[in-house]
View 1 (tube, helix red, strand yellow):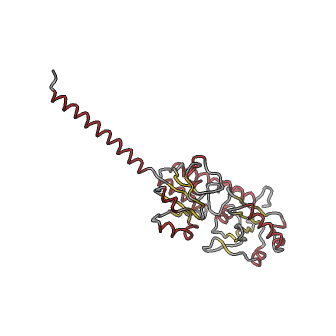
View 2 (tube, helix red, strand yellow):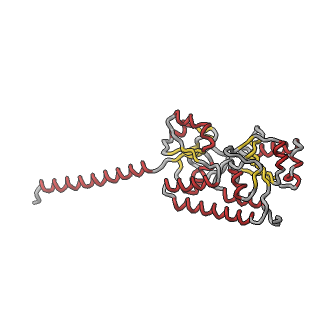
Length: 297
């Protein structure tokens, strides 16, 4: 007969080993959960970036734009211009992302709730590429980020080749807002940056401002050869506003752009006030508008 004491010790040893193994698995599972990022994206542009990098999101903006399939069931946290801090904090995020242009608007509201959002600079294609690289490094998505940056670099090269040997056209960029007329976009605005990359000469430049108040006399003096009208937020309404402005204000009819039918409307989702992952299509389109086939060298 086997020694009962010896059998008891063996049984106890087995239980201890199983307990340690089970505890180790539980600890590892808990650690994995803690290391799994819980990211909230408050703008559609950031959602696009997350999609290209295959990042897990627990919160997305409330938007009329079509969300990528993997995020359609994710919690909505309100519009990009007015996100709900309460809804965001309830999601217990490890990171909240917005854009630098909205920092002044609701940065204080986040701080009041002890939330420290990251404001990404998407004011230019360069800053978009830098953001891709940084997020790729932070979330171990370097390969995906490099792939997107390569596609953007190829679009830049195509635009440079298309403009080569041609005189840069004078370009005026306008940004319309629902019920608020329009602003002039400078070289520091995203669409202004697209114009630069496409080989155009923005007729309004600035050292640091993205947008300026319009001035009829200055516009007429600049005599733009191409006019790009960014219809932001509510394109149907803004298009009507632009059409009415161009009809009522005789100044527009005297510009070269209107005389030669080179006025183009820029609408979401291809175009936006901030850089986004439609940049390749957007740059290709601006390049073609500035240098259509058959343009004289």
